[in-house]
Length: 168
Image 1 (cartoon, rainbow, N blue to C red):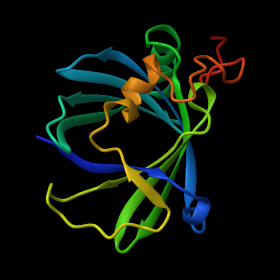
Image 2: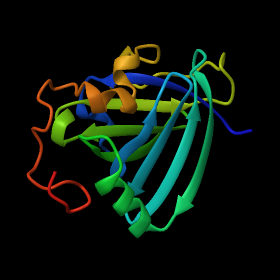
Image 3: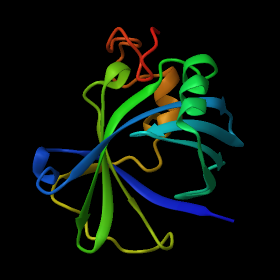
Image 4: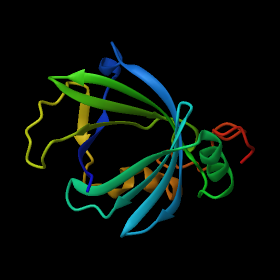
C-alpha cells in the first residue's frame, strides 16, 4: 500500500523561487469524506485520479493512477465540486529533500504553501528560511478543504473561465 507522509508550511517570502520549476495544476474532488477523498487532477497535460485515505498524523494511504487528459478534463468540468483548485506547483531541493511550493490562484488567490514528503513520520528535516508556520495538522489547508472554504474568502473570485477552459 502506498503511504503519503508529509509536512506542510505557509510560505513567508519568495526566497524559494531561485531555481524552482513550475507546472500548472487544476484539480477537483469527486468525493470528500472523513474516510477518503477522490481527486481528479490535470498536471500540465497529464491526467490523474487519486484516492487518499483518512489522515493519521502526517500519514495516509494514497493511490494515484494516470488517466487520459480528456477524461480528467470532462470529470473536472462535469463532476467535481466547485470551485476547482487552481495552482502552479513549483519543485525545488533544500538540504537534499524535494520540496513543492503551491502558488494558488482563482478562489484561493494569494495562498502559498510548501510541502515536503518524508520517508518516515519522525524524520528530521532542515527547514528552509522561507517557510513559516507549520499547518500540517490544520485541516483548513488541505486542498480538499479549499473547495468549500477558499482561503481568500471570496469563493469564485478567480478568472471567468475554469482551468479546463469551461465557464464555471
